[in-house]
Amino acid sequence: MRRWVHGCVGALCLLLADFLCAAEVVKVGGAHFPPYVIKSNLQESSGLLPQLLDALNQAQSEYEFTMLPTAIVRRFGDLQRGRIDMAIFENPQWGWQDIDAEAVDMGLEDAELFVAKSEELRGQQYFEQLQGKRLALYRGYHYGFAGFNSDPEFLSSTFNANLGHSHDSNLLMVLRGRADVALVTRSNLYDFLERNREYARQLLISERIDQVYRHHAMIRAGAPISPERFAALLEQLRVSGELQRIFSPYRIAVMPVVADNSATENERD
Image 1 (cartoon, rainbow, N blue to C red):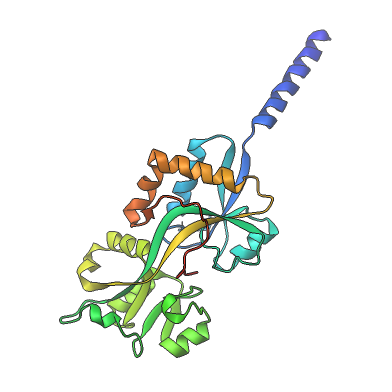
Image 2 (image 1 turned 180 degrees about the vertical axis):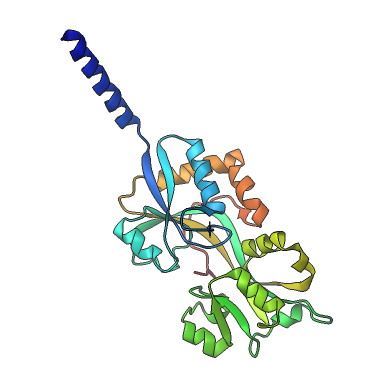
C-alpha cells in the first residue's frame, strides 16, 4: 500500500510540475494578407507571420504563440471578444482607437507604392496625376492619396477605382490593360516579382510613395503576455538577427524601436 501511495504522489507531482511548466498559449490573429499571411487552404497558412511565430517559440518556452484565422474586417471584434490575444502588423490609427488594447512598436517598416505598366516614353511623371486614371485598389484599405477614406463608393466614384481582394490580381489588371495604376504594398510587390520574374521589365514602379507605415502589435487587455514582455522578445529577435533574416528579403525595413510607440502619420489600413 505504501508503495502504491508513493507512486500516486509521485505521479501527481509530475502532473503538477507539467502544469506549472506548461507554456501559456498566446493566440495571434492571422488574416490573409500576402506576404504576411498566405492562406493556401483552410488547414494551412504560410507567410511572414508563421515564420515570426516560429522564431518567437524557438526563442523561449514561457509562451506558445499560435496563429488563429481571422479576417481583415473581423479582427477588431475578435480581439475585443478575446478570441485572439494579439493582432500583428497593425497600426493604432487603423480603427483601434476605441478598443482596449495596447500597441507595441515592432520596429518594422513597409510602404505603399504606385505601379503602372511600363511603356515607351512613360516615366515617373505618370504618377503625378491620378485623376482620369483607372485605379486598382485593395478593398478595405485606407490610402493616403484619398485622405484615408476607405469607403468603397467614395473610392469608386471619385477615383474610378476597382476594389479587389488581391494585390496579385490588381497587378495583373495593370499588366493586362484593365487598370492604369495599382497601389501595392512594397513587400507584396517584390514578392510578386520574385514569383513572376517575367513581369519585372513590364512594370513601372513609382518613386513616389503613397505612405510609409510602421508595424505594431495590438495586445488586448488581459492577454496572457504583457506588452512589455512581447517587446522584450522582439528585441531579442532583433539583436539575434532573426527579424532581419525573416523580413529583409521582402524589403521590410528592420528599424530600431524608439521610446514613443505612437503611430506614424500617413498610415494605411
